[in-house]
Image (cartoon, rainbow, N blue to C red):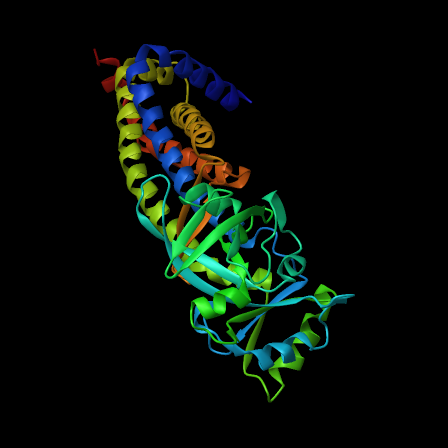
Length: 395
């Protein structure tokens, strides 16, 4: 109990003296706040991208590609093969037939609104059941495209990021002029980065004859996936790869997420090194300014342990305040901020919003706390080891 009282007494004295050293204290806090803000900002990109790629992906939906294809762009099916896929057991049906859509995926160039630079935007040719298959597609402006016409509906993210995709506008790609007749949302999912058209119109526009690149199906339930997959992979008429839509998007997002996370952590680590030196300098200065006080306390009977703990506590409090300020600033600046980046699997743009999540904020504040501990550790040990007689002679 006496030891705890000593820690409390010395720590309270140290914390009360912070305003007298506000210049160095603020410098340390700002350095740590900067580290936290950068870490949160960069990792919020990865989290936002991950959410977009996996959000609202229904486990009842499966996607079929040709075996060996790493994306839709390298896959291909004939009309007859798509019919075999949609007739497989496990596919949901309604009065209009199987809930399936054979689709095309092509890349077009459109300028970004913010910079005017050209970007790769996905143009997807879908069949009439595509919206029913996905289940989360909502037309928020305009209407659906009419089959057989050069009409498109545009994802809300694509309409926001790329020029010429406003409702009622036209844009020309190759020999075709496309009319934007609707804007849709997809529950924040990756489909909002795409432009959808009638597959039967897109096929001749890109000389695809009667071929497709993927087939999306809605299953009777998530539990029907093994039966559906087995029936296709064992069918001698087909050579296919079958995935749940959730797994498909997760696989496609992994490369980008890992790249951004590693880059962000590296940048934050470099900044953290600078902030650590700043914290060390602050705490060494604080210890040096109070050498006589610390020596006096030890002469009065205070042990080395409370002295070490008090310095560590002061460093921890400064770091924690800096971490909270940095985390709050990052949340206000980045959460919900929308942008687009390249999906390396398809080499097309994906629009997404930064996501500053509670676990991300906690992680950043833990970083700040570790910096505070390390920044105060060595100055605390120096303060505790300084001979009493030497300390009392300090002026």
